[in-house]
Image (cartoon, rainbow, N blue to C red):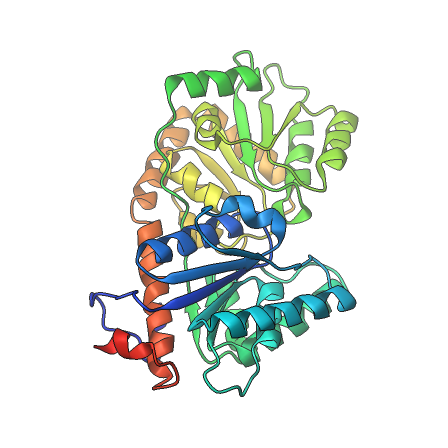
Length: 395
């Protein structure tokens, strides 16, 4: 972790009374909303005054006791709508006078940067967490790059969900960059009844089960997994491939599986991922890129045998011993790796044990809360006397 100037010494209690925080979330896709909900709820329980801003559809992810102000942050630039949303956010921030605004995602970070006047006395500190790599293709990548540069220029602290994102932000000129590992919630082991229900939904009839979980979007590489599953169709006992999640590519993936003769079951959105993992013989993460995927952390904690791509921070998460790592976008390598694990129970057991051992050392949500509070207090302290409430923090 890279320290933020003014950060409190390790282990010193972090008083939250009087600290005002505003969280801005731009998307509910993937684990971002879950992560922000955990941080916001944890800060409130620690005594901070917390308000959340974000799209209305994100509201159910947050504690009903948290004040939630709708802000229309779309996935793509919409000049007329965006301008109105930024002005509305500026009015709300002036009213609330937070000490720190913590925006999650590049779009949200850019909204916050434009809503906070650069030279206004007593303006809040701005922290921006970068959760994702730039999208593929132009002009989306160019627009994303411009928003990244705006975040880098205006943010008082840039937090990054993976080492490669942190390196990218430094290359763009960010002065204060912190790698902030986004931890998966620690789930209770599923009950026998929950596992039985998941197995019944999968309907493998004694065949091996391959499980993948995530948003049905190009980044996640599920088209590569479907292509790999098509290679297994002639086997005597082909694996049953299961993908849990929703997203824009659902119909396309279903059609790809039908045309390729692949035995792929699209389960849709599920709230029983631990039970699905318990049924899996192999968990697959076929992503084109990942930071520190929450579901991969869950699979490792569950001790699953894992096949994953060498993308983003996945190799750092699994190490060389807790997964079979393959190149992204290589369905032949993916198919071969899965069959190799299925054919070698000793290898599968070794992978599962190594995954569970590595997962035992992962940061917990409590660790993430501590790191976030440390950063918030450091930002307030570094501002000297700009915020009257800071005196409580320094007493």
